[in-house]
Length: 281
Ligand SMILES: C[S@@+](CC[C@H](N)C(=O)[O-])C[C@H]1O[C@@H](n2cnc3c(N)ncnc32)[C@H](O)[C@@H]1O
Image (cartoon, rainbow, N blue to C red; front, side, top):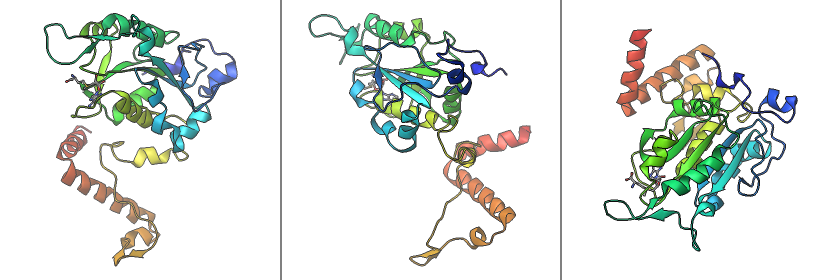
């Protein structure tokens, strides 16, 4: 299959930027507001967030590895303030649900204006630039989806509030609804940050040791084996002997067995899928 990034998404400012594909000229911990600066993307994987609360970003993404990668320009974050597209003195963005009922619904025409802004300069292909709506009724986010997002050039994320978003705008913009899990939060911002975190750590150069994303939970369909570090004995509990034996083959076997045991015990759904895959091979 062709890597969607084989074709340049947009003209790069300099060939060096595009060929490395990740370095951005204006790296910052502060998300750029597209309201002030709709400047061209510079080749880094970019998350564009449509939200009523741009101040919620970068939030926890400014910490640790994702924060460092953001300042290094390995990825970029831009917010689009939905309120700026609101109408009237109070910049209203919502209205009562058609057919009655509690709460308010974000208006299609207002959201569309914000999405238009968020899609400026982005490739039209949804494979290269997914457009998602954080939604409890969406497809459940998982590691495979994080990998797909990381392979794209960037992503637009629409954070809902209140009762959600007028259905018509989701249809019209071919928006994919994605859920963080089977629970309901007050807004999409936390879900967006969780999904960005899971995606950004898969981008080249963000984690020091890429091997660590290959072995961890969900990468190979199994949960990760238990981890230990010093002290060798703590409160009478010893590190399993095999891990200090120096026998790499035995360590690998032990880890694999533990990984399978944990998956079987904790996630029968994953275990069944793993076994089914094994039979297909
Ligand atoms: C109170 S919720 C709306 C729930 C909606 N009325 C429903 O029942 O599906 C407000 C917003 O929070 C976000 N949200 C809530 N739970 C979420 C979840 N599990 N995953 C992703 N986004 C969520 C969505 O953006 C949603 O529009």
